[in-house]
Length: 360
Image (tube, rainbow, N blue to C red):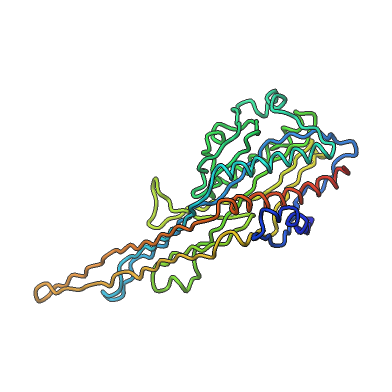
């Protein structure tokens, strides 16, 4: 594991003219690699297999507590629900900022002497035999609940049908680990690199989120508690969302694992180069989203016992549901700039590492 600490002061200075109220926290990234350095005469051809941004705009939290009974007394089951969303997000501005991040990446790569390969060369590989076209601009609801997925206007690539249709979520489940293993065994992007004459394959995802859900275990002793509060940042994020379809238990939520990552693959076999750059901790973004917390508490309705005749009693257990929703207005320009500034800081950090390895 290699640790990188990169100062974002230069980035902040360059863009302070249009982001005066915004600041980025300290950027601490890590690179997990195979330990294999690029060969001295490694190809400097680059194919960008993926570039997308995931931006959170809505979040729900749900907490369920079953009936509590002791000697015929207690409380009925209770469910607490909370929802928090953003208004004022300008999708055109968000698309423009993702376009700029992608265009900046291409410009930077070319200025350092890399050669960009286009999708026509990738189409000829067996790796993409069953793939379908994936072209920008794309602005759509992500398969991960509460997020927008944005793909640059000038992006022209290939993907599975599920990915192209926006149905490929990062939902955690029993088979998710096996999917990762299957990808590794098949060679992943290194297999694509081999077919493209050992070109460098880049796969980049940016995740900007703001929700923090749930509370401490003490909160749930007296009843059901749902909480959401804001904390805008770029980084790795696990989010929960209520299960709405299929067989499910009361109050059941699914977990989705999202990661800001800069993946590089080149070559194959024992001498393959592969690494993943990611953020050691979320890159905090202040001055954009006000601190807001929405909370819903439901203790559950107390049981009621009635006498029926002289020998029988009936206890009534009533389920209750509470819900509290709130929308937060954001400055569309600041919110879009936040994605660009944080994304630019991370990508530049990773390009510095890449250029150092390739001695560009």
